[in-house]
Length: 117
Image (cartoon, rainbow, N blue to C red):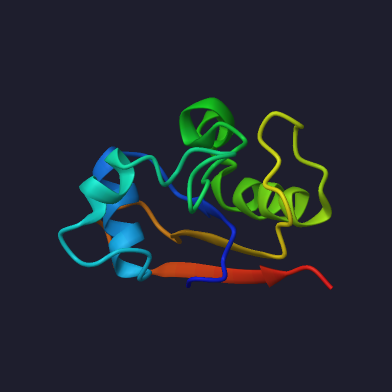
């Protein structure tokens, strides 16, 4: 996971993001809160900028467009087409991740790793 430069992570609740960061191996179990507090998710300065499209509340929760918007923003980052204020420099490897169902109703999850050629 060290080579991934950007992540689109399902973010319906703060704890969901922290759990995914830990489960995906970006930080150790129990260290997700510290990972976030240390500024690792901030575009331009952090180790792993996430959800540069504004995330769920700003972009995909209206109209339930969740999954595809994660992939779209990851592709924008890889192509260098994200908004200049949030474009991740030299983004060559990106991750898109989220549940495939309503949280609490099952245990389905999908994660894609995308690479720029």
